[in-house]
Image 1 (tube, rainbow, N blue to C red):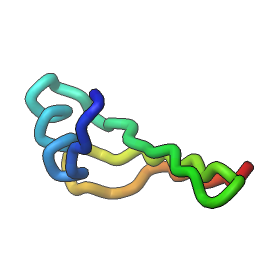
Image 2 (cartoon, one colour):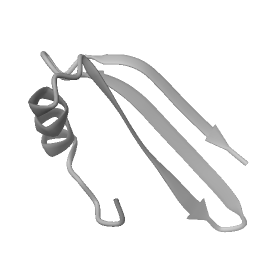
Image 3 (spheres, rainbow, N blue to C red):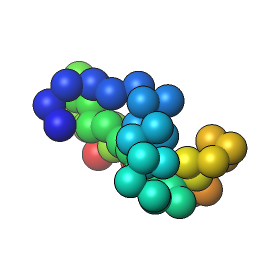
Length: 56
């Protein structure tokens, strides 16, 4: 998707399709570096199952 989707909306979409978890993330340019962030979130309960943040 090209537009931003809130975490809550993504969870609702995941539940609608029967997913147990969803993966959301972003890539941001900070000066001359990139920050990459991904999270696996449970669709029920909204607990973060795994997270990854890295700067390049």
